[in-house]
Length: 344
Image (cartoon, rainbow, N blue to C red; front, side, top):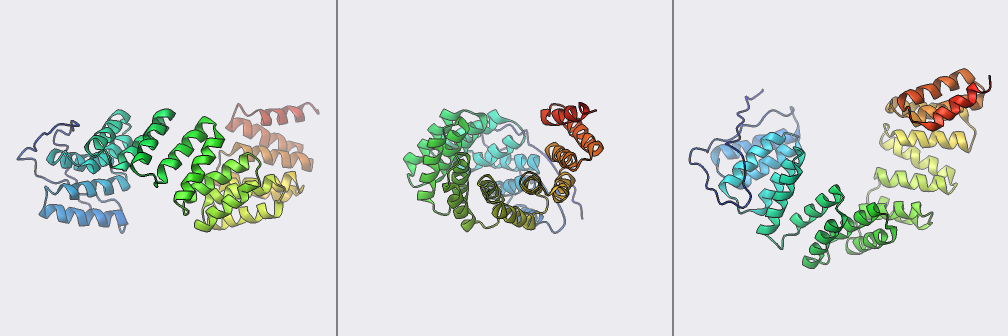
């Protein structure tokens, strides 16, 4: 049954650092919107709302409900709840983390960053604000600031693997593969169950053509057997190493886990076209890739190559033209079309 949402912001402009006391009349509580029947988020919202009806000024409950609102993409409701929590108590660092998330969702990066800085100011030894600040600066492309925040985390806790992950991503983004690898190795040394670090190590070593890639990716999959990014990278590593059977088996396994993974269809089709000359089988896989992703112009182009190899010039022209329609700047398709037109 749909509840009527009583949405208010109570003049919600939270001034970071102020010690504003709540208005005595601002004691009403936001009712939860219906998210979806039998949806776990709705159950949590209902439970928290029941508790808040009995204790409307409980700031921890307001913060928890705000986080659930964020989980179910009800950002304005989240902002209202966490704004009220901060009006009641502006001294809790965790509340500023929540409002930072809300502001980020609302595309207000300055306010999001300001909330993180306030959280750090309130609890200088609390690493979570520093972690999010490092992520924030990486998102903005401010690499040195990102590294500085990560190093601040390590000064607080040298055994935390998260700052090594952040620095690894940062150095990878900067093109410094050696330092990226060094930091990912530090991350797995501190946390041997770090799936993401092993995956990144596999991807970076694959990019270098290193045989170590396979071992790192298998280590990642030992932690998370259904990790699609590790499986895809492993398939690509096999493909580049001419281990075609292993590559096809890996892509097939991926599609058993997720039948909508269009890149796996594409790669299977590419192996069948390029290495095995199985053009009909390749066409089937490229068709599946396009069915899943209708804008997959590379797969459309590969269909053109298959038809061209089969001698069906009309269909090849049609596919090259369609690829150009999807991406007017796609030179390979333009070259293919020009090649066929020049044979007249």
